Image (cartoon, rainbow, N blue to C red; front, side, top):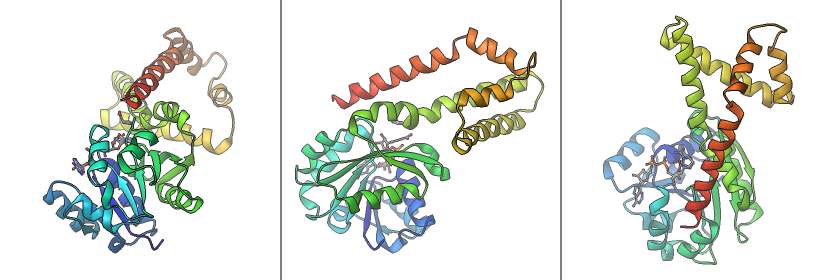
Length: 269
Ligand SMILES: NC(=O)C1=CN([C@@H]2O[C@H](COP(=O)(O)OP(=O)(O)OC[C@H]3O[C@@H](n4cnc5c(N)ncnc54)[C@H](O)[C@@H]3O)[C@@H](O)[C@H]2O)C=CC1
Ligand SMILES: O=C(O)[C@@H]1CCC=N1
Protein backbone atom coordinates (compact mmCIF):
# COMPACT_ATOMS: atom_id res chain seq x y z
CA UNK A 1 0.00 0.00 0.00
CA UNK A 2 1.39 3.41 -0.93
CA UNK A 3 -1.08 5.46 1.10
CA UNK A 4 -0.09 7.67 4.02
CA UNK A 5 -1.59 6.45 7.27
CA UNK A 6 -2.26 8.55 10.36
CA UNK A 7 -3.12 7.84 13.98
CA UNK A 8 -4.86 10.28 16.27
CA UNK A 9 -4.32 8.65 19.66
CA UNK A 10 -2.12 5.59 19.91
CA UNK A 11 -2.63 3.58 23.09
CA UNK A 12 -3.40 -0.14 23.39
CA UNK A 13 -5.50 -0.45 20.26
CA UNK A 14 -3.66 2.15 18.20
CA UNK A 15 -0.40 0.32 18.86
CA UNK A 16 -1.96 -3.02 17.91
CA UNK A 17 -2.98 -1.59 14.54
CA UNK A 18 0.34 0.21 14.04
CA UNK A 19 2.34 -2.91 14.98
CA UNK A 20 0.23 -5.10 12.67
CA UNK A 21 0.67 -2.73 9.76
CA UNK A 22 4.44 -2.69 10.13
CA UNK A 23 4.92 -6.40 10.95
CA UNK A 24 2.88 -7.46 7.91
CA UNK A 25 4.85 -5.15 5.63
CA UNK A 26 1.63 -3.47 4.46
CA UNK A 27 3.06 -0.09 5.28
CA UNK A 28 6.54 1.21 5.93
CA UNK A 29 7.28 3.31 8.99
CA UNK A 30 7.93 6.37 6.79
CA UNK A 31 4.30 6.19 5.55
CA UNK A 32 2.89 6.55 9.07
CA UNK A 33 2.18 9.72 11.15
CA UNK A 34 1.16 9.57 14.80
CA UNK A 35 -0.18 12.20 17.19
CA UNK A 36 -0.92 11.91 20.89
CA UNK A 37 -1.12 14.94 23.22
CA UNK A 38 1.97 13.85 25.20
CA UNK A 39 5.14 14.62 23.22
CA UNK A 40 7.09 12.00 25.25
CA UNK A 41 4.62 9.33 24.03
CA UNK A 42 5.12 10.42 20.45
CA UNK A 43 8.92 10.33 20.93
CA UNK A 44 8.68 6.80 22.39
CA UNK A 45 6.57 5.64 19.43
CA UNK A 46 9.07 7.22 17.02
CA UNK A 47 11.89 5.44 18.80
CA UNK A 48 10.09 2.07 18.94
CA UNK A 49 8.57 1.98 15.43
CA UNK A 50 10.53 4.56 13.43
CA UNK A 51 7.28 6.31 12.41
CA UNK A 52 6.83 10.07 11.89
CA UNK A 53 5.72 12.01 14.94
CA UNK A 54 3.08 14.70 14.38
CA UNK A 55 2.83 17.88 16.43
CA UNK A 56 -0.97 18.05 16.24
CA UNK A 57 -4.06 16.13 15.22
CA UNK A 58 -4.50 18.70 12.42
CA UNK A 59 -1.11 17.73 11.00
CA UNK A 60 -2.21 14.06 10.85
CA UNK A 61 -5.51 15.05 9.17
CA UNK A 62 -3.69 17.20 6.59
CA UNK A 63 -1.06 14.57 5.84
CA UNK A 64 -2.64 11.12 5.84
CA UNK A 65 -4.93 9.40 3.31
CA UNK A 66 -6.29 6.99 5.93
CA UNK A 67 -6.66 8.40 9.45
CA UNK A 68 -7.30 6.11 12.43
CA UNK A 69 -9.11 7.78 15.28
CA UNK A 70 -7.92 5.71 18.26
CA UNK A 71 -8.91 7.91 21.19
CA UNK A 72 -11.39 7.02 23.94
CA UNK A 73 -15.08 7.08 22.94
CA UNK A 74 -16.01 10.01 25.21
CA UNK A 75 -13.68 12.40 23.34
CA UNK A 76 -13.95 10.96 19.82
CA UNK A 77 -16.61 13.36 18.51
CA UNK A 78 -14.89 16.43 20.02
CA UNK A 79 -11.42 15.48 18.75
CA UNK A 80 -12.73 14.82 15.22
CA UNK A 81 -15.03 17.84 14.98
CA UNK A 82 -12.16 20.13 16.06
CA UNK A 83 -10.12 19.05 13.03
CA UNK A 84 -12.92 18.29 10.54
CA UNK A 85 -11.86 21.09 8.17
CA UNK A 86 -8.22 19.89 8.06
CA UNK A 87 -8.86 16.60 6.24
CA UNK A 88 -8.24 16.30 2.52
CA UNK A 89 -11.32 15.83 0.36
CA UNK A 90 -10.62 12.15 -0.37
CA UNK A 91 -9.33 11.17 3.10
CA UNK A 92 -10.83 8.13 4.79
CA UNK A 93 -11.43 8.26 8.55
CA UNK A 94 -11.46 4.97 10.46
CA UNK A 95 -12.88 5.04 13.98
CA UNK A 96 -12.34 2.27 16.52
CA UNK A 97 -14.43 3.90 19.27
CA UNK A 98 -17.04 1.77 21.01
CA UNK A 99 -20.53 3.25 20.93
CA UNK A 100 -19.83 6.08 18.47
CA UNK A 101 -22.14 5.61 15.47
CA UNK A 102 -21.49 6.37 11.81
CA UNK A 103 -24.10 9.08 12.08
CA UNK A 104 -22.34 10.73 15.06
CA UNK A 105 -19.02 10.47 13.21
CA UNK A 106 -20.52 12.07 10.09
CA UNK A 107 -22.00 14.87 12.21
CA UNK A 108 -18.50 15.51 13.62
CA UNK A 109 -16.63 15.16 10.32
CA UNK A 110 -19.14 16.36 7.71
CA UNK A 111 -21.66 14.32 5.77
CA UNK A 112 -19.43 14.23 2.66
CA UNK A 113 -16.66 12.34 4.47
CA UNK A 114 -15.70 8.69 3.81
CA UNK A 115 -15.89 6.92 7.18
CA UNK A 116 -15.43 3.36 8.39
CA UNK A 117 -16.51 2.36 11.88
CA UNK A 118 -14.66 -0.63 13.30
CA UNK A 119 -14.69 -2.75 16.45
CA UNK A 120 -11.39 -4.54 17.09
CA UNK A 121 -10.39 -6.40 20.28
CA UNK A 122 -7.24 -6.62 22.40
CA UNK A 123 -5.99 -9.99 21.04
CA UNK A 124 -4.98 -7.77 18.09
CA UNK A 125 -1.90 -7.11 20.25
CA UNK A 126 -0.81 -10.72 19.68
CA UNK A 127 -1.88 -10.98 16.02
CA UNK A 128 -5.11 -12.81 16.92
CA UNK A 129 -7.63 -9.99 16.77
CA UNK A 130 -11.20 -10.02 15.48
CA UNK A 131 -12.49 -6.81 13.93
CA UNK A 132 -15.82 -5.76 12.46
CA UNK A 133 -15.77 -3.18 9.66
CA UNK A 134 -18.80 -0.98 8.94
CA UNK A 135 -18.38 1.50 6.08
CA UNK A 136 -20.63 4.47 5.41
CA UNK A 137 -22.22 4.89 1.98
CA UNK A 138 -19.33 7.05 0.66
CA UNK A 139 -16.52 4.59 1.41
CA UNK A 140 -15.48 2.83 -1.80
CA UNK A 141 -14.81 -0.88 -2.38
CA UNK A 142 -11.07 0.00 -2.46
CA UNK A 143 -11.36 1.77 0.92
CA UNK A 144 -13.10 -1.26 2.42
CA UNK A 145 -10.51 -3.66 0.96
CA UNK A 146 -7.64 -1.51 2.27
CA UNK A 147 -9.10 -1.40 5.79
CA UNK A 148 -9.93 -5.14 5.77
CA UNK A 149 -6.33 -5.84 4.73
CA UNK A 150 -5.00 -3.67 7.56
CA UNK A 151 -7.07 -5.43 10.22
CA UNK A 152 -6.39 -8.85 8.68
CA UNK A 153 -2.67 -8.18 9.12
CA UNK A 154 -3.15 -8.92 12.84
CA UNK A 155 -6.14 -11.24 12.93
CA UNK A 156 -9.50 -11.68 11.25
CA UNK A 157 -11.81 -8.96 9.95
CA UNK A 158 -15.29 -8.99 8.44
CA UNK A 159 -17.72 -6.41 7.08
CA UNK A 160 -20.73 -6.20 9.39
CA UNK A 161 -23.90 -4.08 9.12
CA UNK A 162 -24.11 -1.38 11.79
CA UNK A 163 -27.24 -2.81 13.42
CA UNK A 164 -25.12 -5.85 14.44
CA UNK A 165 -22.53 -3.74 16.28
CA UNK A 166 -23.97 -4.55 19.74
CA UNK A 167 -23.60 -8.34 19.35
CA UNK A 168 -20.12 -7.67 17.91
CA UNK A 169 -19.16 -5.76 21.06
CA UNK A 170 -20.61 -8.58 23.19
CA UNK A 171 -19.10 -11.54 21.37
CA UNK A 172 -15.78 -9.97 20.35
CA UNK A 173 -14.85 -6.45 21.57
CA UNK A 174 -15.60 -7.13 25.24
CA UNK A 175 -15.34 -10.93 25.10
CA UNK A 176 -11.63 -11.26 25.96
CA UNK A 177 -12.48 -10.00 29.47
CA UNK A 178 -14.87 -12.87 30.16
CA UNK A 179 -12.47 -15.41 28.66
CA UNK A 180 -9.70 -14.07 30.93
CA UNK A 181 -12.06 -14.52 33.91
CA UNK A 182 -12.72 -18.12 32.84
CA UNK A 183 -8.97 -18.78 32.53
CA UNK A 184 -8.38 -17.20 35.94
CA UNK A 185 -11.11 -19.34 37.52
CA UNK A 186 -9.78 -22.56 35.95
CA UNK A 187 -6.28 -21.70 37.13
CA UNK A 188 -7.60 -21.01 40.67
CA UNK A 189 -9.16 -24.47 40.69
CA UNK A 190 -5.91 -26.06 39.48
CA UNK A 191 -4.05 -24.21 42.26
CA UNK A 192 -6.65 -25.59 44.70
CA UNK A 193 -5.71 -29.02 43.36
CA UNK A 194 -2.02 -28.30 44.15
CA UNK A 195 -0.64 -26.99 40.86
CA UNK A 196 1.83 -24.05 40.97
CA UNK A 197 0.11 -20.85 39.78
CA UNK A 198 2.28 -20.08 36.75
CA UNK A 199 1.85 -23.62 35.48
CA UNK A 200 -1.92 -23.39 36.12
CA UNK A 201 -2.22 -20.27 33.90
CA UNK A 202 -0.27 -21.98 31.15
CA UNK A 203 -2.44 -25.11 31.21
CA UNK A 204 -5.69 -23.13 31.40
CA UNK A 205 -4.75 -20.69 28.63
CA UNK A 206 -3.52 -23.45 26.34
CA UNK A 207 -6.76 -25.39 26.91
CA UNK A 208 -8.80 -22.32 25.88
CA UNK A 209 -6.60 -21.58 22.87
CA UNK A 210 -6.62 -25.20 21.69
CA UNK A 211 -10.38 -25.49 22.10
CA UNK A 212 -10.96 -22.27 20.13
CA UNK A 213 -8.65 -23.59 17.41
CA UNK A 214 -10.68 -26.83 17.21
CA UNK A 215 -13.91 -24.85 16.70
CA UNK A 216 -12.30 -22.75 13.97
CA UNK A 217 -10.38 -25.52 12.21
CA UNK A 218 -12.63 -28.59 12.38
CA UNK A 219 -15.89 -26.84 11.51
CA UNK A 220 -17.57 -29.16 14.03
CA UNK A 221 -20.39 -27.95 16.27
CA UNK A 222 -19.05 -26.94 19.72
CA UNK A 223 -21.52 -29.41 21.29
CA UNK A 224 -20.02 -32.26 19.27
CA UNK A 225 -16.51 -31.23 20.34
CA UNK A 226 -17.71 -31.16 23.97
CA UNK A 227 -19.18 -34.65 23.58
CA UNK A 228 -15.81 -35.90 22.26
CA UNK A 229 -14.23 -34.96 25.63
CA UNK A 230 -16.94 -36.55 27.78
CA UNK A 231 -16.12 -40.22 28.35
CA UNK A 232 -19.04 -42.29 29.69
CA UNK A 233 -18.94 -42.20 33.49
CA UNK A 234 -15.76 -40.12 33.15
CA UNK A 235 -14.39 -37.00 34.78
CA UNK A 236 -15.53 -34.38 32.24
CA UNK A 237 -19.23 -35.15 32.38
CA UNK A 238 -19.07 -34.54 36.14
CA UNK A 239 -17.75 -31.02 35.47
CA UNK A 240 -20.34 -30.48 32.72
CA UNK A 241 -23.15 -31.52 35.10
CA UNK A 242 -21.99 -28.95 37.70
CA UNK A 243 -21.58 -26.19 35.09
CA UNK A 244 -25.14 -26.84 33.89
CA UNK A 245 -26.43 -26.92 37.48
CA UNK A 246 -24.70 -23.55 38.19
CA UNK A 247 -26.08 -22.00 35.00
CA UNK A 248 -22.89 -21.32 33.03
CA UNK A 249 -24.75 -20.80 29.73
CA UNK A 250 -27.38 -18.60 31.30
CA UNK A 251 -24.71 -16.55 33.12
CA UNK A 252 -22.83 -15.97 29.85
CA UNK A 253 -25.99 -15.08 27.91
CA UNK A 254 -27.21 -12.67 30.61
CA UNK A 255 -23.77 -11.05 30.95
CA UNK A 256 -23.67 -10.48 27.21
CA UNK A 257 -27.21 -9.11 27.24
CA UNK A 258 -26.01 -6.51 29.79
CA UNK A 259 -22.98 -5.75 27.61
CA UNK A 260 -25.10 -5.34 24.46
CA UNK A 261 -27.62 -3.15 26.32
CA UNK A 262 -24.78 -0.88 27.51
CA UNK A 263 -23.37 -0.69 23.99
CA UNK A 264 -26.82 0.34 22.72
CA UNK A 265 -27.14 2.96 25.48
CA UNK A 266 -23.70 4.43 24.66
CA UNK A 267 -24.66 4.71 20.98
CA UNK A 268 -27.67 6.85 21.94
CA UNK A 269 -25.30 9.38 23.54
N1 LIG B 1 -9.39 -1.69 24.81
C1 LIG B 1 -10.24 -2.45 24.14
O1 LIG B 1 -10.48 -3.63 24.42
C2 LIG B 1 -10.92 -1.89 22.93
C3 LIG B 1 -10.94 -0.54 22.70
N2 LIG B 1 -11.61 -0.04 21.62
C4 LIG B 1 -11.65 1.39 21.40
O2 LIG B 1 -10.33 1.85 21.15
C5 LIG B 1 -10.24 3.21 21.53
C6 LIG B 1 -8.95 3.44 22.27
O3 LIG B 1 -8.89 2.56 23.37
P1 LIG B 1 -7.49 2.14 24.00
O4 LIG B 1 -6.45 2.02 22.94
O5 LIG B 1 -7.80 0.99 24.88
O6 LIG B 1 -7.20 3.47 24.87
P2 LIG B 1 -5.80 4.05 25.37
O7 LIG B 1 -6.13 4.90 26.56
O8 LIG B 1 -4.80 2.97 25.52
O9 LIG B 1 -5.34 5.02 24.18
C7 LIG B 1 -5.93 6.27 23.94
C8 LIG B 1 -4.93 7.14 23.18
O10 LIG B 1 -5.53 8.41 22.93
C9 LIG B 1 -4.58 9.45 23.24
N3 LIG B 1 -5.32 10.69 23.50
C10 LIG B 1 -5.91 11.10 24.65
N4 LIG B 1 -6.48 12.32 24.46
C11 LIG B 1 -6.25 12.66 23.16
C12 LIG B 1 -6.59 13.78 22.36
N5 LIG B 1 -7.30 14.81 22.85
N6 LIG B 1 -6.18 13.81 21.08
C13 LIG B 1 -5.47 12.79 20.54
N7 LIG B 1 -5.12 11.69 21.26
C14 LIG B 1 -5.52 11.63 22.55
C15 LIG B 1 -3.83 8.89 24.42
O11 LIG B 1 -2.60 9.57 24.60
C16 LIG B 1 -3.63 7.44 23.95
O12 LIG B 1 -2.55 7.35 23.06
C17 LIG B 1 -11.49 3.52 22.34
O13 LIG B 1 -12.33 4.35 21.59
C18 LIG B 1 -12.14 2.18 22.59
O14 LIG B 1 -13.57 2.23 22.56
C19 LIG B 1 -12.21 -0.85 20.71
C20 LIG B 1 -12.20 -2.18 20.87
C21 LIG B 1 -11.56 -2.82 22.00
O1 LIG C 1 -15.35 -1.79 27.45
C1 LIG C 1 -15.36 -1.04 26.47
O2 LIG C 1 -16.09 -0.03 26.46
C2 LIG C 1 -14.51 -1.32 25.25
C3 LIG C 1 -15.35 -1.66 24.06
C4 LIG C 1 -14.93 -3.02 23.64
C5 LIG C 1 -13.93 -3.39 24.58
N1 LIG C 1 -13.70 -2.47 25.44
